[in-house]
Image 1 (tube, one colour):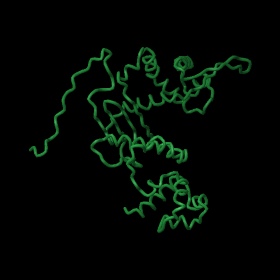
Image 2 (tube, rainbow, N blue to C red):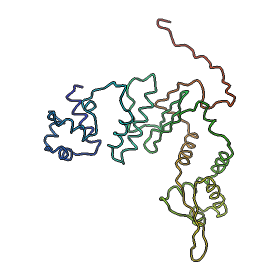
Image 3 (cartoon, helix red, strand yellow):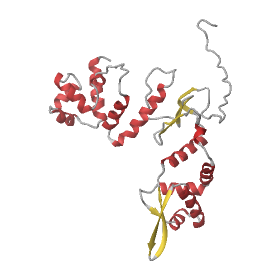
Image 4 (spheres, rainbow, N blue to C red):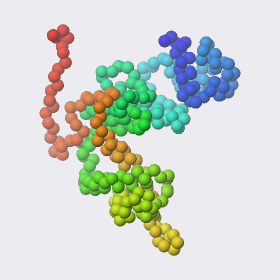
Length: 298
């Protein structure tokens, strides 16, 4: 692609990404819509307009002209900040997934082209990253996309666990269809909506004693919060759901674990040790890998 078509392609792409019409961009630059149309088809802006054009599009001139700058001093955080702020809120989740997918693909030593997230997948497809330093798992289908990343601590993830009693209590709580039904019902509510045990019992057809037992356990974990109210001169305890991010991810990942992850794109495995470590620091001997073919070897 020559530099002329690169400029025009990038101009159109960036304008549309920002949700701007030719008329809106023209108004920002105090030029006619016909001028913008010409830039996108056959000509260039005047030189003094280029910095203003780049500013309005929140993009560098190098990027607009398709110039790849290899600069070790580039402020990656600033570039990401600029990009996210320039995208409308309703498009940010898609941008996040594209950035994370590209970053994961870049860890693949067998791929030297830019990884670009496709708009659709024929099967339920995941992307995975497993090295001695990080783990990542991403579901790519648009009906439920997510990206989970873990930087492995030097002493292993289990060094973070400490006392596992409450972990076991949480898993015991979640090991119940009714508990998952209650969490799903509460999680579908709006912020700060309050519920009574009687209401939950009636809506989900679960005995009130069972509902109270589960709600009390969720309360101990800080997953619900309670207030006291007088209704018709009768004291009533009402519960609000915290919409805890970690619990949502736990349930989603639990479903992932129970699926057979058949399609991985990509699946990058560059590891020799797992994410856990032994408390005494003892390590197994690394099993040597079979060396790759030598040049000319038959």
